[in-house]
Image (cartoon, rainbow, N blue to C red):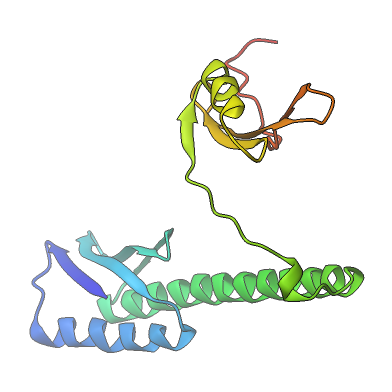
Length: 183
């Protein structure tokens, strides 16, 4: 974890730095890897303000507190960060549990197949236009070609059917369309 402590109109004393670092150690109990955390301490008239901004597992955490004592402000900011981390941890735990439950239901509904019947093929994915993919399909021995469409960026599969026609399999996901202000 990278901790940066900045003071505006406040001198960062060794005691203040040690207090912030000791409070940070308490956040490690949530079991998440803290990336960077920036603590900003400043004074506005009679208010001692502590702000914290950080990134944890790709998510931004932010907290701010103002009291009449700097140590109390630091305590409140760390408590707010702890609440955010606890919420992140609970969401992650619930999310994983939900997937595990769904996966077990799906797995129990699929009949077991012996491993010798399954062959894993990992073809190199080429970026091709549709016309280039049709030409490449003619040279394949399997009659199946998986490629990344150069125009759309989607992964698509071309399959030559027994009657000689070509089938395009386009497993595109539903994407929300941007509405650019037009109706």
